[in-house]
Image (tube, rainbow, N blue to C red; front, side):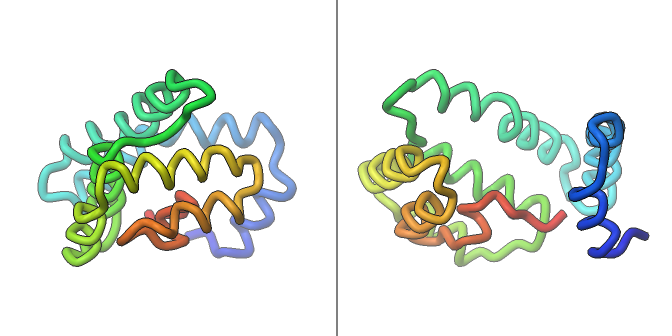
Length: 140
């Protein structure tokens, strides 16, 4: 099993070819994770496809007005929790955000890009969204 130091070395010294090789393993790794950890493996695979492929296209299609809607934020939390540890209070907190707040804060965050720190701060204004969720840093 690779250590954190091995991972850091890979990210700082890996070649494009090595990154592409590892990326090709993602579907297989996801399937193994789904079969091992999820009660409904197909749900994780479907949600992951939505998160990795469909959601970015939806956000990009909104152009200069890029934002997320409430349901998309709720789905992101569901994706996050099905991959890792489930915290029911986080799901509840994310759901109590108003659609208006979700749209406003995500618009603000996308306008702050590429300044990740400011974008994460904007997203963290939403209930249930901390720096881990805002940054997309999920434990696998």
